Image (tube, rainbow, N blue to C red):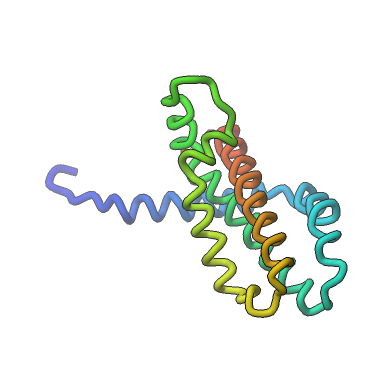
Length: 152
């Protein structure tokens, strides 16, 4: 071990990939289906089948990415939460430390699916608010699962 170079970025990427696999293993499909039926389907009713499928695929990707991101960041998020001067909830931790990264993930996913090219402005704004809610709530779900599993 002496004189050996430790590649932290490689170790981080290996850990991140391990945690993403764990996220897939623990992914709460029943909660996602409930969320889809209660929150998403009412927004999609007026769209064509093709647009509905594209948006559903995008939403599923956002949910999983937010959940996996939460699992990956769970230990760090707990440390950040403990470092705040007062007892706060996970929503506050997300808003203070992870909202910007969440917005970048939303932007990248929107770009990948190019939805704003064919969604009307009113729908675009409604869906963007939904995407923000998805990122925050599923990130927090991932953090809580990551802490419960105590993954290293």
